[in-house]
Amino acid sequence: MSDNAASSPNNLDAFWMPFTANRQFKSNPRMLVGAKGMFYNNAEGQPILDGTAGLWCCNAGHAEPRIVEAVSKQIAELDYAPAFQMGHPKIFELAARVTGMFPSGLDHMFFTNSGSESVDTALKIALAYHRARGEGARTRLIGRERGYHGVGFGGISVGGIVANRRTFGTMLTGVDHLPHTHLPEKNAFSRGQPEHGAELADELERLVTLHDASTIAAVIVEPVAGSTGVILPPKGYLERLRAICDKHGILLIFDEVITGFGRLGSAFATDFFGVKPDLVTLAKGLTSGTIPMGGVVCSKDIYDAFMTGPDNMIELFHGYTYSGHPVAAAAGLATMDCYKEEGLFERANEIAPYWEEAVHSLKGAPHVIDLRNLGLIGAIELESIPGKPTARAFEAFLKCYEKGVLIRTTGDIIALSPPLIVEKKHIDQIFDTIRTVLDEVA
Ligand SMILES: Cc1ncc(COP(=O)(O)O)c(C=O)c1O
Image (cartoon, rainbow, N blue to C red):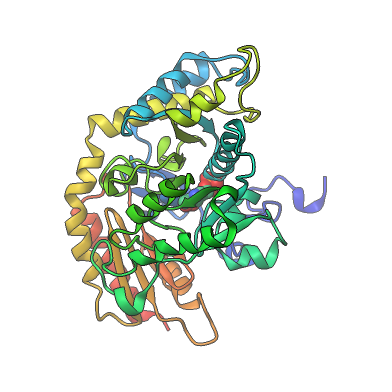
């Protein structure tokens, strides 16, 4: 055993933390050791109000009793079942429950273990679908600037984040991008969907002219981009994108990893915006963050296109050892029960106006250059310190944590997304803390 692998719980060396400033963290760790409802507890015994539902995932709040019980029971009853050529009842039930929450026509669900896997799965289904229909030349994938679709090679390729392009080489070929819809010069301080920018969807027509529709398989967008700083779709934008995809036989994929399961006060962004995609990627809120699980919902047309040929043949050459894991399935079913019985999507919708007022109450606070909101999502964009991008927001994050509130930052944007059980008093605490912190940061 090497020296630094000693069994001391205080040894932080071995774990290479994801998306984390490792050296900064390890010099002053922020350890969470428990959670209940709206709060974490840290190792110092301090309650930390969760302003971000973990990572946009714990929509039902922490340690929800139904989910805890279902997971505990399931692991004793059936810990694992092979995912290929075998099944177990709960995963069929979960697929029916989730697809039943979508508009009719989005009828089938494939299971994964994360948002990243859901994205790669959806892209692969799109390519295979066109091939199955005899349009195998449709191989091009269109993403969007400032899109985040997880960390797989497919996801980073259709995503629009410069750090991925700088760091990981050429990625997938045959990918192009729409422009992002962040237009602060026209839309700053919008409440809800911004007025300006629907015409940016027409850029898809430009890409069709450039590449020809017969080479394009799919367009993937987040209906509301979360991880790159809460970028909202301008009014009419998603509708236009849908119409152009329809015109050219291009599949439309909504990445609802963040917007799924009540974040906007409706089950999915698909029904919130009234725009029906062909494929939807899900994760996070599917199990309220308790057990890793993702999924792809797809249209009947897509599924049916695969159900041809000899019926002993595998139709889609894709899947994971843990696709539809029994414990995750139990967590998913209990999560759906909780959403329904507690009326959490309606609750999110009811409290959203209070949330909107709270977000926009920060207008005029130091460093604030834009405020945005939709459903139970909020963004506070700060002016960057010249030559030190991200420094100001990160300092705000650390100071909020010291004062007992967990926020999330991306660049110099504070992104907020509390569990759907959030109450007015919690919203007040989140924004009072941020207001105090904005007065203190450099
Ligand atoms: C829109 C979107 N897609 C995909 C992902 C990736 O999900 P995961 O981290 O579970 O792989 C995320 C994660 O935040 C996301 O926001």
